Figure 1 (cartoon, rainbow, N blue to C red):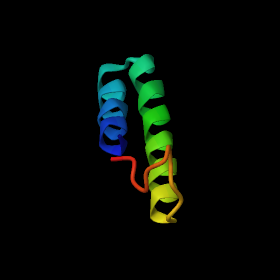
Figure 2 (figure 1 turned 30 degrees about the horizontal axis):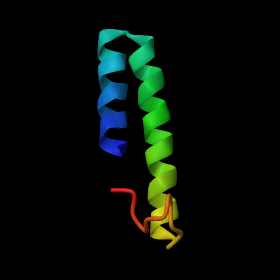
Figure 3 (figure 1 turned 30 degrees about the vertical axis):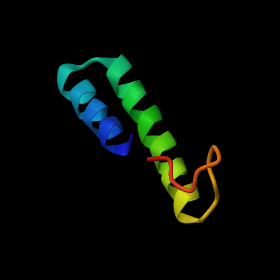
Amino acid sequence: MIILGVILLVLGFLLKISLLWILGIILLVVGAVLAILGAAGRAVGGRKHYF
């Protein structure tokens, strides 16, 4: 999810499409939060890892 967010950020920046930029930021933030929760040992959605 984090990698997809970064790809969308880059594409949105290069193609000047603000929707891709916004989706990239959202995916990046959600992916980072899930990664932090998983690394802290907290179960997210009943699973230790979201991937």
